[in-house]
Image (cartoon, rainbow, N blue to C red; front, side, top):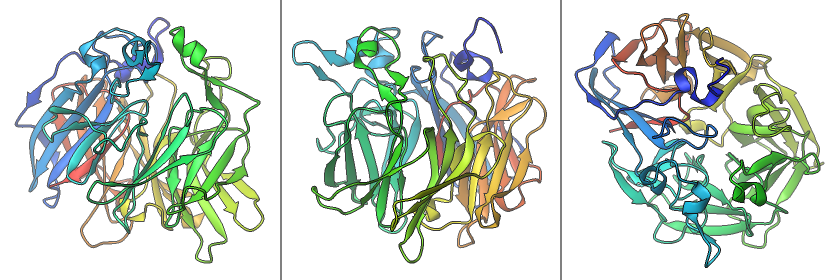
Length: 449
């Protein structure tokens, strides 16, 4: 890693300068004919070329369109937010109204994720409102669900495969610190509920089951004084207990949250959660680090993320915790059809704090066999980000594809890799190459047409 360039701007984390549209695209292998849609990936790409930390870069979405075995085009575009329109300016200064002491949640980077719901596409970042974009990546603007959204929206909402509802939360630096939402399949907010927590913590993700939502109240706390002074707004606090909160999905406003103490840690992302058939336990899987930013925003010595499992006993209140692997990995995903339900398989990508890792590996975990995993090893010098599971029509849980953007360090270019999830060790079914570099970025989705 470079001594002068911070990790979040080094190697393939570095921003790219241009917005382009490219066609036709070079294809190696054969794109499955059933794949018609677009693969999207969002990530930070600071317009000025510099940002103080990985969360601060302007959102840039990359997409490749596939249709009937053909690669139609690649496109990348910034999300046009106030942060984009005022490059280099302080987010706090842009968002905070001194006269009213209110925060304008239209001021966001929109740089973390992209989801689809009720016929709309949303670029998400947990500190602000979602931004609606078109399939060709034009920015429509901030979206508030007809004014029902008055807090930020998490970058990790969950779509229930049974009801079609969109479940999400928003956290704020001031009370109410945590609010959860339930949105109908048609896009109408049908429930808003304040969750009582003692202070603002950085709650990046959460989990759902068939009947519950699970919040993670962990020791990365927000410090408004640091934020107002222009510094990172978060810090580790050993005095803040680590706990998971379980709330019935359709509970009324006065229903209690049941809290379960867990060992101190931070969880960036959940893989999934589900109740056992008798309703006695809830199992949560995700990627865990023992601590985060204990010595400040530049402290990355808290440990590398490992796939972890927590079993919450709803009868006794006890929690059993265990690591499922000793290989560091992140960006856990499951098949969307299994979200909140018992599942067998989960997928992650290897994780390193090196700016230029030797190569990336994609893991498929068989969780019914104690965490046994299959591995896809990219070639030396090739790295990738989050792998997204895309099902084949009418088949089993692991029958489908894994898609990810990969970077060839030697060539300085990138490609969309399409893997057979059921035969992960095999070479890619197809690679869609583009003559530009796609930075590693954060999260994305396959949106079929």
